Length: 275
Image (cartoon, rainbow, N blue to C red; front, side, top):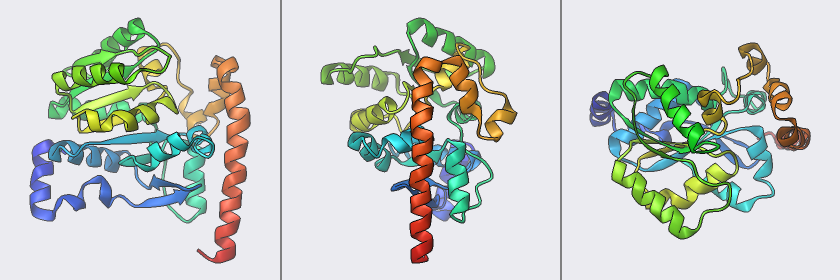
């Protein structure tokens, strides 16, 4: 849907018919998860750009959901987001067990790929925040321009791994605003990206920020993605562990079972109360 069509739709039906506020939510482990698919999520992002309504979108894996139980800042950032998308397959399974009918997840790297196509169609300006280093960010920009001919990438920055000072965040915010992007892709991994988007939201005029985690590494060609059959069956984690065992093995061994245990508790409580 083009920006012009979004505006026309708003005129005829009202902004709430197409905006993110019209998307149903389901509470899973205390977080409000959007019950949506790629097309509807992208329509909501279009609406945010058309109305210049600033917000940010989190593509949530089970790791981030589990981590939010111990990390208040992360939890608050997710709860304050415009949309919290079901990025992890276990989140889709959990929603459907609770009575929803989600056909699939909204996977951050795939959302980035699909929405960049829309950005080309609609002329949206794109800014990139993330990457392992500046060389990886340059490679990402080159790859994205090859994948999406005509994509208007108007800037980017690969932040250091340390925490940024308020002054550094302010300087980056000014740099972003000077480029006037419509979409800001954030690829610094959970929980850093969710916290960063929440922290700078009021300092940046860009209407849509989207945290997409490992999408930067995938699209830059630094890490290969799991085959589709592994993704569809929810066993992508085994492929990722084989690639980065030292970093990811502890995460999956701890957070995946923890998520499942907490969800079983929620399911039992809801069935006992009939809610």
